[in-house]
Length: 259
Length: 165
Ligand code: SF4
Ligand code: SF4
Image (tube, rainbow over all chains, first blue to last red; front, side, top):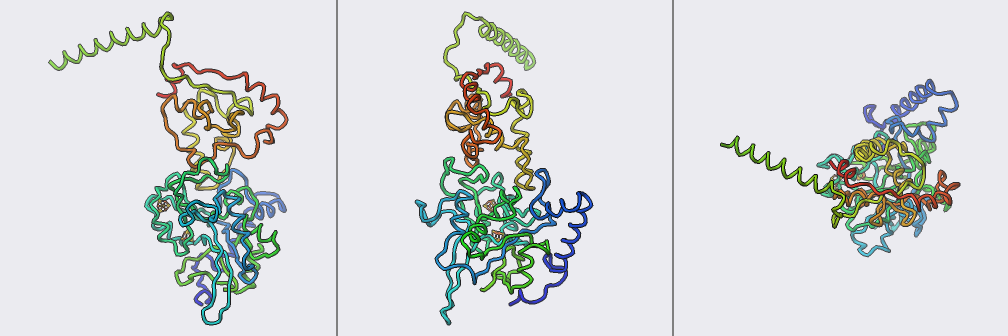
């Protein structure tokens, strides 16, 4: 319940600061570009030659009350978008990379069942980054936690450090089955990237959230948590949400409703 | 004593080099054996690379590394110096890849120069979608196909030696 307590102003994601940052961005960008054009820019992406900015914090809201039992659409969409083999089709399912998985939970006392997808929570204070000996694990300015495969040595410290079991190591050679937009390969650790290739393209959405919406469940909302006008910020203001293992104080980019 | 030895050695080296050059220079000597020379197929798409050919032959790794860091760490995905764009232009029409067959663009020189690259352990060697469907490629694909079939230039061993140094 600690996440229900009002946060202090010094917490990076305190609502006050979020609103302030959002307003500041709007003003700054509005000065730079013609009005109207700029609002579009903020909502749908940035120029190709512009670095990801800390004015944005990408996040996701998972509404577990809408997540359908037995539905696996987000997981298949992720595997299709990012090119990892679905675990059921893998030769070695126990060590197969998995970027997102469906969990079915049951309250032992009441038998109430809950369904939810679990993936990298894109922590603002990511333990995976803290432990990485090479600096390969890093958090991008816009809050997306990634592995730089050029420097990852496959030591798997980050897999041990992650409280959410979000990361996998690629054990097998992938033999040129990768997607051109999603390089990945043997000996490196990987996890959900919030579809960083789509974010950079300006899609403003992830494959899993698109699939969930297309299936009519609308359990996933992706967006900029720093922009007070974004769909996700509005929903986060209205719905009671929780961070998984909020006691760890990692300030997660994925928030759950109905757990 | 040591000085004398060094001078002698140097002299020996000069004599040997001259002899070797004379041998290499004589056209009468057929070139036997040696590594097969790299085949550099003309890019399927586009007329001119983002820099001069000479510059790219020597420095492609530097510009690629720089761009790679910007892309991975900061999310800057401009087309110039992007490996994906190299692949879009240089994938062979036969294999659709830059590294599937031994004559494909990247492999051809790299095996000649004996420089092992691991780019393609992780990166796809093929362009996105079928090559003819590439927006910049669609109109001219049939024509380019013919062009590419004729235009393969062999690179001389001397040129390659220059690049490899
Ligand atoms: S959920 Fe795990 S992998 Fe993702 S940022 Fe947090 S610690 Fe790192
Ligand atoms: S496996 Fe790679 S990303 Fe993870 S801690 Fe080791 S070097 Fe860092």
